[in-house]
Amino acid sequence: MYKTGLVLKNSDLLAQITALHIWGENTGFEIEAVWVDVKSLTDVWKKKCFDLLIVEASLVGPKEYQIFREIKKSQCSHIVFCGQNGNFESARIGILLGIDDYWTLPFDQKTIRSLFQRIQSENVKTIDSIEKYANELLGLFLRQEAELYNYTEHLCRLHLFSEAADQVVQAVFEQNDWLDLYLNEQEFLSPEAIDVEEHKNKLKQLFDEFLLLNPRHNESLDSIIQYMRKHCFWHPESLYSADIQAR
Image 1 (cartoon, rainbow, N blue to C red):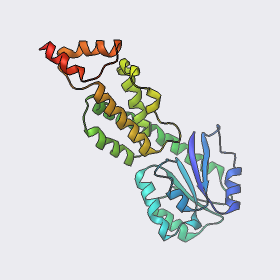
Image 2: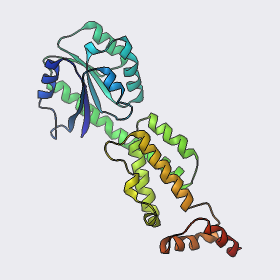
Image 3: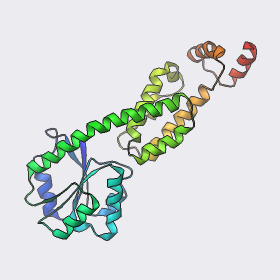
Image 4: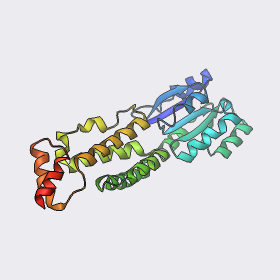
């Protein structure tokens, strides 16, 4: 489902928007959260991405301009301003901030559905981007490159980290079947409400554990290490004695 956040203080606007027959399985969009001021949104949006934000225009003043600039720059959410009637100044500010539309009462369901379709179409492109970034992240992981840490920060800035990280975790466990003997895959996947920082730390923990269990080694030791991993629990320090014997 596509997540929608409402920033509405006016009870009439809230009642009108929630009463529309546009929510649920029919469109794939649902109301995930409702706030009565922009400050509440400010505390949440960096931790949880919403596909669409519908904001009461009268709540947006000069102090709030920067938050909407940041949201648009992050490409995390589409933004719509709304009001009981048209307001030229609010519409002008909305254009300057790069919002997607400005709705007034009575809300036009055809216009809203058209925006939903545009968001869904753009999401297909986002899915392709996530797969590309996930493959890059997986390559860094399997090659055991420290650049992985910087790359995770890059994905966080793009608000694509959690989706890409889950794909990487699944691929790492699929490609290294011995890993299940030591680690639980589910502990490194992101539950619905996980904080991005917490999820980032989980991936880094998996990377560190993987380095410990799979240190760089001479190819001649590969078959020995594979056997040890699959048939008994081992500590990487045993690699040194095996290396000496191989020489």
